[in-house]
Image 1 (tube, rainbow over the protein chains, first blue to last red):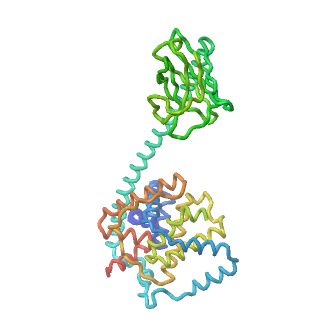
Image 2 (image 1 turned 60 degrees about the horizontal axis):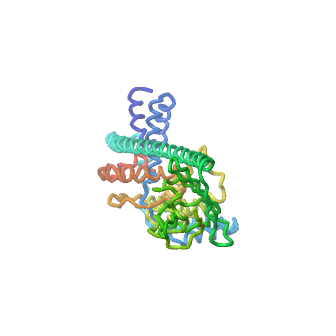
Image 3 (image 1 turned 180 degrees about the vertical axis):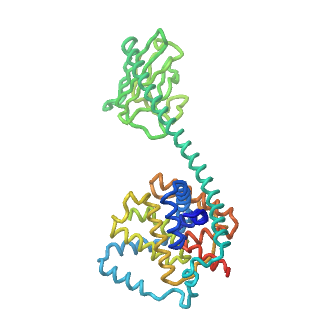
Length: 284
Length: 140
């Protein structure tokens, strides 16, 4: 391929990617592509642009009747639809006196002024090159953000697992070493139960709740420590789908100084005092 | 019909863009989905992303109809049209990226001189070979 032919073929790459070349122009581009990796890369960039053009359309909503017609056509026998399609094809043109197609231009692909190709190529190159860069930058940013989100999600999962493991270990240690209190259900047919293990030396308590009834989304369970008929907030928690929870808390005073404990359902964020009957309760 | 729910808007929108006539665009949309229903094997992953392939056959079908109806492509470049705040109904992440790219491109096209934007519109959506562009421009 001569230098001039290659130059022409190169200038046709944007139009080729858009499917806007004549057959002999397309052959010229394809000849170059067969032996020129750089040209192939250039074409790939413009093909990305062509793909993006498919999605650059303003959204128009089809009428609901179209879906109904499509359903009917799918249900209809093939033959009937074929007849309908044939009738459609035989339909007279929407424009009864169309302007003649410029076939003379199509039949003389080599007789057009160079400036037209230059202008067209330049427009496509300028527009295409600029847009491709913009798209590439945006795509790179999207990819970087997606990678960051993935890393953060992995970190969060890892931390959640570590916390759960730590809680389980701590609960296990406290349960084996400290004082134990059992909070019994307040309703006869309830299976809810809560166990509190208390480690005096480290002022650490572990609450294990099991078989607690599920709550509405905007509700939590709240632990109350009772002393002289006064209710002190011990913290809020949620149970899992099985009605279980393990909660570590550090009361301000020794549990032995309280008269009792109870757990009530409360609105999210907790309440200053119990607003519902206790689910479980214990006398200390 | 799931495919129609997910891609019907995109197919119809592209057909309207090429044909500039909603009634014809409805026919094209119906034809495209009917053919897909009857020949689901027409697409295979080797052909690339499904949505790109679907929109390509829509574009081709619409251009065929333009030619069959012997219509002159119009140069009604919608430079002033607002970018749609539209949420794709397809669950594919690749479709979401393609849609984002496409809408960004549309925004960028609006920044081009009108004749350049129209040129790209003509070349891509109407498949007018370079040789015909001077006719479309009224050059001799």
